Amino acid sequence: MGAIHATEDAMDASDIRTLRKNLHLTQAQFATALGYSSRTQITVFENGRGTPSKQGFMLLQAIADGYRPAKWPGVAA
Image (cartoon, rainbow, N blue to C red; front, top):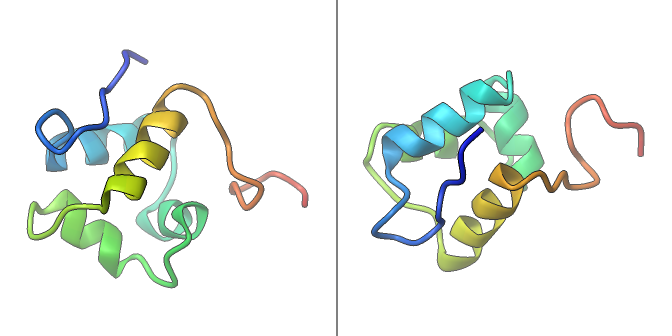
C-alpha cells in the first residue's frame, strides 16, 4: 500500500475509505480499532462530512505505515 501522508490537506474521505478497504476491515471494525464506539464516525469521515482530529490523522498515517493498535481486529489482546 502506498504511503498516505496524514495531514488535513493530504488525506481526504477517499483516502480514508481506501485505507480501510485495503486493510479488509468493515467500518465497525475500523471504528473499534481507532477508538470510536460505532461505525457512524467512519461513515462521516468517508463521506466527507467531517474530518478526524490532528491526532486521528496521525493514527491513520501510522496505520497506513503498518502500525496496529492493541485493539486491532483479529489480534489477541
